[in-house]
Image 1 (cartoon, rainbow, N blue to C red):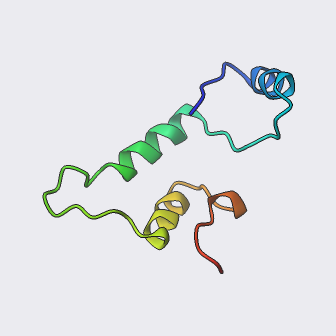
Image 2 (image 1 turned 90 degrees about the vertical axis):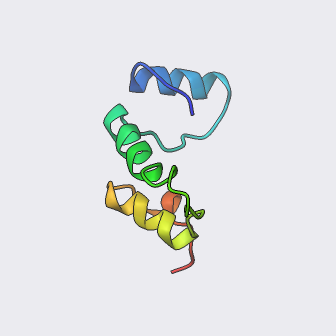
Length: 73
């Protein structure tokens, strides 16, 4: 994960490296993802999320679309 100051910073960084534009999250989205993703991590019965469960976590905080799709639909 990389943190950027602005959209202009993102564009400058990726252009300098000749990289395609990926997905970006706001700080609140990053916080929401971390909070939901790790909510049960300390549970003794914790199990790794299935691709379907992970995709549901993404969708629950508004991360949808091809980039966030982990299963064939």
